[in-house]
Image (cartoon, rainbow, N blue to C red; front, side):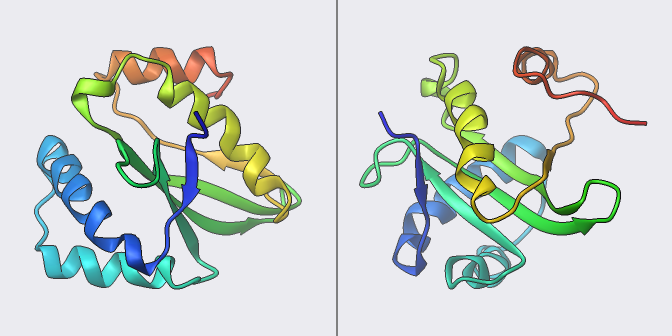
Length: 139
């Protein structure tokens, strides 16, 4: 399965329910209008970030949003995984690994030098995945 599909404005109605589900899991309080307002510039091609649908494009099972920055230390553009969500009934099947391995390759052509993420200390499942994929903690 090709896991990553660049999200476009027509995908907003596929994305918003998954974003709401992620926010509910994480305790993030935000209105649907605020989510739509924050997401739409990325779907319209903002240079500040990108959103991808995960899984089949017509029936995605997740999404990932990356915000872009610039680092002198790292030699150029870096990315920060702002949000990643996979529907609970699909977790544990390797999609997260597939996405996190494909993502740097997909963005390398645009000049991405490094990809960062954050994870809470008590999220042992995610921490194990990130360690397996060679993400390293930074001080």
